[in-house]
Length: 309
Image 1 (cartoon, rainbow, N blue to C red):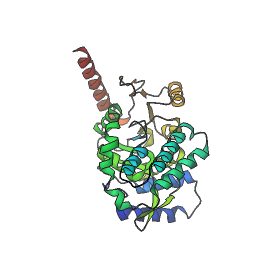
Image 2: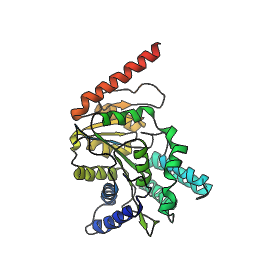
Image 3: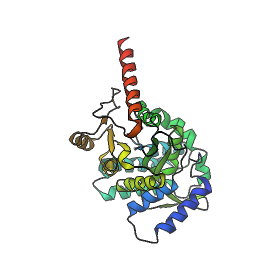
Image 4: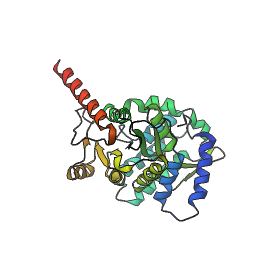
């Protein structure tokens, strides 16, 4: 994975090529967004062993970290006078509305998309590049759920790849993945031209069915067996992603997703109150399951020793 926000000129070339390639035959916006996200995704870590056909896919906002990553990044840019407080308020409101009602109302998805367009349009990729990691340290690093991060590490220790899958722009998602030591990231792809964001997205936000399309495209590219893969999310919006894999789990779930998880006997992890995650089933597949189970058992034993003494 490139450490540069925007992947420099290479990503622009990928995006332009993706636009031309995807335009040859009609595809749904969700499929275009998903395939563009997979095409833009770089691998930071070499494929691990002993479970190269398995991977874990993690949503970001409220699953891996508290709140909306794009909002915190925008707040960091606003502090640097790259746009005004009114723009930040508009972005925040669109994200809240998107989280609450995006699954039910396409208008709210469109509003969130427009806010994302306004957020990036006209900005130079190189100007943003140097700010990504320092803004991560300022506004996001201390919002990562320790329990959720441990889940990612358990999969890595089990020899599985770990990918973020998020509506957040792929550049920001890639920074998060790099800082957390993960394999890579699938995110919303914003078109660039002449080193600037054009204000257009390739296919649209990576949301709902688009996340599933991105995972399918990545699985084909990377030789993954989705029946051996795991996925984690907090939102019922991500049911297409969760239903795609053999081992779905929910993290800090909303009410709708919690009902689904209980009815389907999916694992539930809740880190919001600081209590130990509720484990309804073993949330990892393949040859790495034993290693992950051992890591979980060790973690629980350590917490019990601390509580007792």
